[in-house]
Image (cartoon, rainbow, N blue to C red):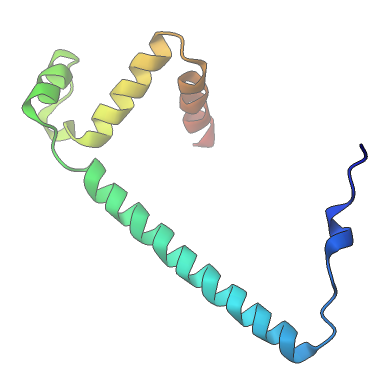
Length: 102
């Protein structure tokens, strides 16, 4: 079974008006998607900076995390680190990627 080039299925748009319409539709869809991603990122930032509950606060205290750093972001990073310590390769890769990124 041979794989066909997916570009063979493309039909060129010969009408510039139609091309503009499709480009406009694509641009609007892209703007909506970009706005949604931005809103999700802002909401995630709010959630990550919320304080932890008492159970998780005890865990972070045990690990020596200062009171001012006790938020959901620290908790998520702590969970990631615990997985990496147990040998979770994906967790280790994620940590390495974050370190190399800086």
